[in-house]
Amino acid sequence: MAPVIVVEENRSKLIVNNSGKRPLNKIKVDGCLISQEHEKCDWLVATTDVPLRALYIELKGCDVTKAVSQLKNTVKLTEATFKDHGKECYAITTRVPKHGTDIRKLAMDFYKETKATLSVKNVQCSVEI
Image (cartoon, rainbow, N blue to C red; front, side, top):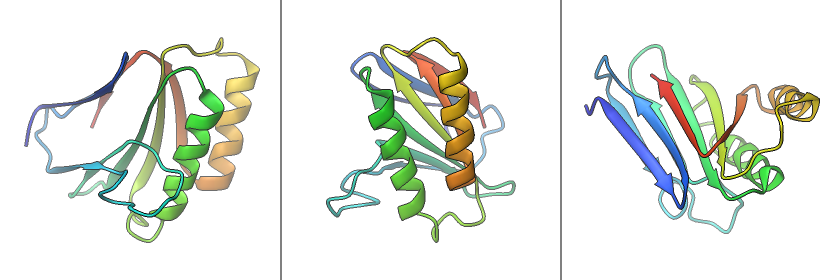
């Protein structure tokens, strides 16, 4: 498996560092994993070995609320498929509000609803898998 996976759109980018070369699936959600007219995120990167992890990725302009909504809906729509995976959601935006109480509260509410972590990052984010 590739040591680095990059997903990007416009100026938003997420880099998945896979230094252990774990077996991964990189899935384009829209039209591949979820084809119906549902609100959904852009990408999903999932490990196929233990520990199971699923990274939900939304690459967005500046609408954090819309990005979070898309991530939340995708987690719910894929609940059965990724039931044993630890879920991490990433909203990568070109402009993010200051990481104050609003973003923290959003992340806490998101976790209560989905049991998935939420990270809101500006322009680029790097994750080790």
